Image 1 (cartoon, rainbow, N blue to C red):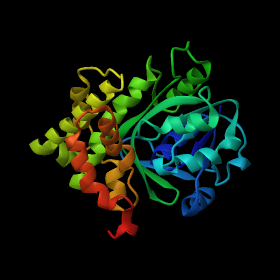
Image 2 (image 1 turned 180 degrees about the vertical axis):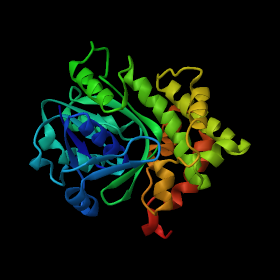
Image 3 (image 1 turned 30 degrees about the vertical axis):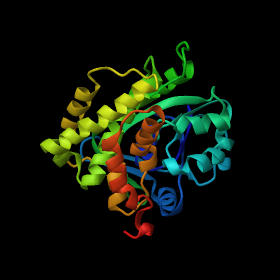
Image 4 (image 1 turned 30 degrees about the horizontal axis):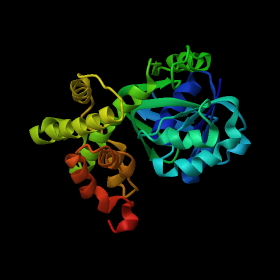
Length: 311
């Protein structure tokens, strides 16, 4: 199976490396010092809880035209780069290519459909805690490395996704093809909106956040508002979703954090408009109150452009 990873950050780096370990022909698209280090020393995944991985030699480029059409594109860029990256991946997309966005948010696939049509876009969700710790090196925290992906609509089992699932399992990735991928994307969105906004606003990892009564309650309040927005959009989520997410957080290593908190700490741009910002915008549009998310957005808005905004 031929796979291209568009955006070799924490998410793309981990899952691309695991699929390369499984024997897939994986090409990584990166840039700058990260790309130079990968070309020279390979792509290294470092973890205290799961196996390290070194892909060397490693197929890496900053130009998708050098790679050509692939079976699967794992689309892993930051949300603000979605539009420009969608144009860049055109050389990767052949007649039967599946494009799977592992980005955050719920509106990501709308952009990809605009460029490539509905048939090529597959819904996707990722669960992993990983960041670039040095050029060419991705550090993974915790044991969770899970992908959820599925065709949109009521379609029979997809052979292309079954092949990808088999490759994931061979590479040690927990891979699931749900009956309803849109519901799965909203379940991740509810979880991520809470974790990203609360860890970023408090400047804390998940350990202190889940342990303090007030911030634990804040996680619940953020999720409750997001679930109400989902319901108003016609997405029915399970009653036990909040309890399951709290249990998931309780099982994480206490030093695990969100990419937004990491970006805030390092003076990078924030994906705030596509997370809590989307909850607030949709709530306003659907007449659903979202006061907790609105306050968190307002608190984080001064940092949305990172260090260049005066941090």
